[in-house]
Image (tube, rainbow, N blue to C red; front, side, top):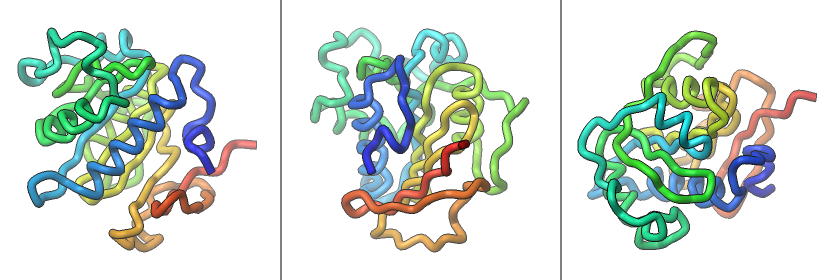
Length: 193
């Protein structure tokens, strides 16, 4: 299984960008920060529409830095993002991999959104923004689960094996398939056929 299988073909987002974002999210889920679990949200692609549907919670710590120093594939940027993930709000990642903004509040609506019980506001924001735009959202839950949303739907859950979650923690309602990639347990909704 590869990352294209996880998220399908997104013509407006480079596969490598989505892959790097998911890998970073898994690292944050596993490592936490300063000995505690943290949650965060990455909204990838369709950045103009996403920025119109969001606002900063604080002064943007990424504002004013050149694009070439904010690419999600850059190891230095990844460490900076891990630090900034402790702040409230979402990261907006351009389809080209530039992390455009941090600490964004996503204007979310629950209209036409159905989520399993127990998922919080980060997940509502992810479902809502992907329903209203052509973006993909990657949520790191404080319970160390990484969930991916597309078109308003929860499409993938990634559960790092070290946390040994049981199948009861799976929130996907649809039939799903389970695979292992490296040392990750990945549960993906079966495609509509």
